[in-house]
Image (tube, rainbow, N blue to C red; front, side):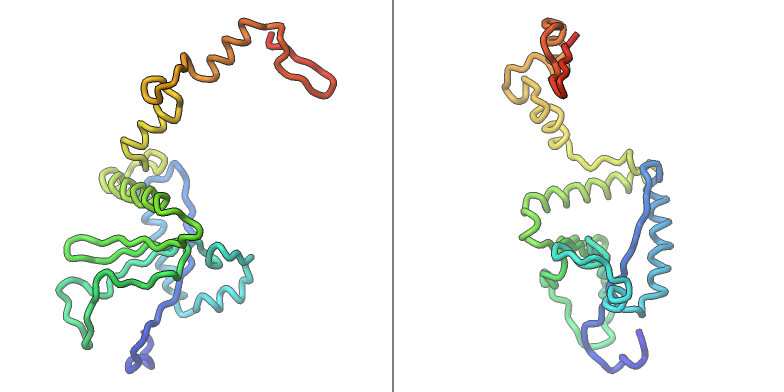
Length: 212
């Protein structure tokens, strides 16, 4: 912080726009290492306020999200456990700034663990969508913690119940959905083509193609 603000009390926060490139073959550990360097570089330019950056870059504006970034992330480590405050203050749990971002994630240090809060625009997201996103985020953290050297594409976001629903209920599997479906659609299509090879399969532009 600048010395000229030593005697000023207030809320001084600036947003840092972070662009993170990634590939499916990159490991999660490699992603974190690259992201750490990107954040360090951004912190070197933290004195440039976001409004000034937006004014200089003039990005295309969209009322659905803030300029330059779509997801806000804040790691709140301003009050480490056991630390004595420099000035008189008290941390009030469960009170956070809301309504500032269309989609924001806040991480709070809490003793030996962390608390996660997700802020979102109710006009853009349904509660069940946010609940699913939070579950996927936690699943990713758990998977990455257990296997940091696994490629990003190898980490699974789905819970067992979600995977079972996608592979059985949504796929039309008879045992799960209760439908009388003898086979997947592509097999039914092939069987129909074999039964009626001379029937028209495609008609257009004055031409007709049969299944055979």
